[in-house]
Length: 366
Image (cartoon, rainbow, N blue to C red; front, side):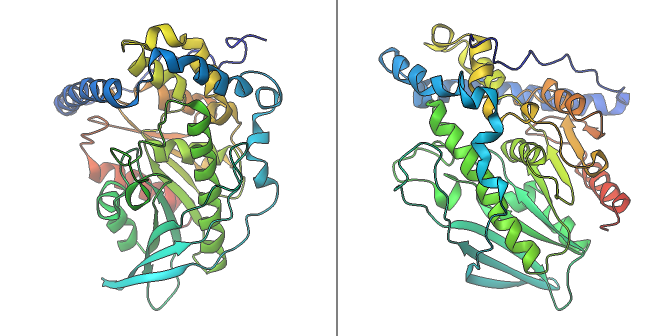
């Protein structure tokens, strides 16, 4: 079995609905902004993340278990901990502050995560959540919100994930800090999330697996503590994880991936192909195969389709439209909202909020 045989197929060309002429300017501005940032990201990746030529054989060896054998044949084995419910763990609450009709609490969860193949004695850090709760009555439900790559600062995450809007509509909000981000950034890392995007594929796979475990850990506690219907809303990397979890569990109240990548191998090819060792290191098919074990396109949707809503940017050049379009096709064409603008310039935030609110009303959560 070759790497190409176990790869995901090429992403389909995205067909977008017509855009009002008055919105095309916003999409053009967002596209230009994304293009500048993509070029800057390529330079950072080349300086910080790209392996040397001498490191490539070791990286190929690390990828080998994901290209053949049990994980290639049954990727769900990688998330075998989901065969039983994740145990409910009571968090420690560190700080609280009042916030219009409720409280914002900083919570820490102890994790019992066990790596798939890495050193099982490796220490777990605390799982951090900023929890917005209503008082005194129960919420309509809870949004478990997942930030994007290199984020992880709750105040910024709250703005990017529209936390105030959901809270004002009667929903609690739980902002999870993903592994290796924000206050969980390891010593020595140059930026938040660097370890998550490690060039060693096995390291990134473990980061994704750990994130899925932590999402389920926090979700179990939210349900047990009376958080009402609990669903996921994730941005970019958080959207990837939202879409992945929707293919692994069947009891999410809703799943709303925003500008979600769906094939890390495709993104890696876009960023690495022109780099100093990128073209020589792997083929496009090899990269797609290498990250297939946790691609949302690997797993059929397990939720009712009506519980999903995809949010996508017309001018996105960081997560190109082919990605959310591929997820839309893979999920059987559920509701999708295309906004004007791009990954970094999502114009029409009010329309995004309205689309999500309408979706939650249809589910009788709002």
